[in-house]
Image (cartoon, rainbow, N blue to C red):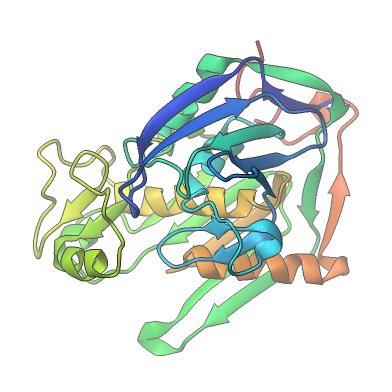
Length: 311
């Protein structure tokens, strides 16, 4: 049986929210089979649980934000995509996350720190089968026309493959790889994707901060680009780090589904909002998906059974 996974022990992290600038503590705990990923706001007078799902997503401006049932005015957890991306990359199904504020800490701006935390806690197999959502027919969301066109698509595929194309018309970005494809059966998430950092443009900083965004951002956790070049002294971690970070984000955005996908995802200039609309469109069409498990690990697509050691 290809089994569900959770943590072996509890682990902690403390850091700043990239937008709020507030210090936040995370406590990541093992969770029972079939419980999924659940955030708990422990800073409130009465703690509030927020299970991750496409319908819990309540805001997608600059990051993915969830609230109970996706309701406005309810307690929220912001910027969940990097942590969820790490969970997907390590094959974690069940996780309880206590958080002492509104925003997941940005740490180094990538998913690598979360991968380290999760692997340090250890990963164990559980006594229930891992349940995949298999895409059975294409689903696509398109918005805009001409230069404003953007789209995202899911298609049937025996595995999990993502392809993303960016277009910023910026010399520093255009000089790097604009198209990245990552296949979980061939690549290594920790090596190939997890270290890609979030990025932003120096010209946008003042406007963002006037709106209460980017208050925790710095060259320590964001790749910052001016009119012509990358400002970070250490440069880029990957030659195509910009596009790879969009893949990292997409993996996290799609992980709000609550179960791993068997699909080929492709996108052009997509973002958090379009990714969430894509998931909702997929779930709205019962002919477009089915839930499957694998009685024997060797029946699963290559790469899933050995995605990360379980110890």
